[in-house]
Image (tube, rainbow, N blue to C red; front, side, top):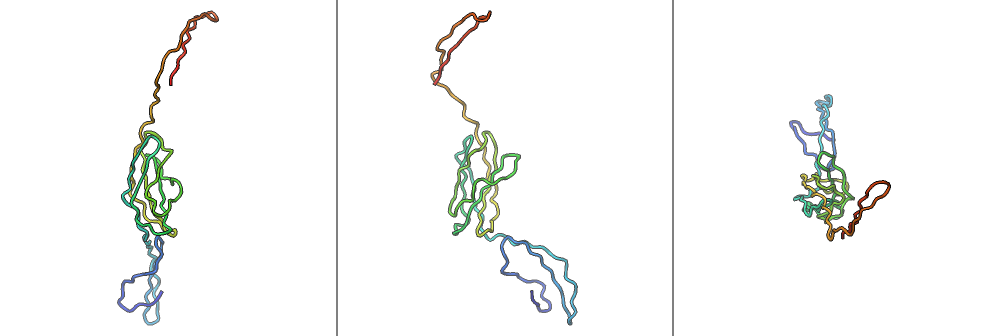
Length: 173
């Protein structure tokens, strides 16, 4: 809102809200006669919240992994959101937003032998940062069952119901 001097062809808008969409129009006035408003132009302000960086995965097992990152900000009130997606799937939020200063989280309930992509972002006063580039992880195969002390305790053969039947008794620890 306001009038500008003749010949001015640009303006710096200040006091805009981060991560907000705005429409801008211009109208000329000469000797009290106003032109039509220009077609509306859209602009979108970027987030002023720094994004986390250096996202990586470690301690990957068949059903869990740990992800960690460097904080873009540790300002009081900052939260960090985590989203995860399996290969071929869609991103979904993992858990609740994490408090300021948290730089890692354990992911549990993952499916064995599956590729995942993970992203994190900060939010401050409802204004989110951009999501980090995705970190990839691949869960391992489920652990094989192993038995020790496996053996045949006894076996026998008997005739029952007009048929021979073999019986084996096994034990293991």
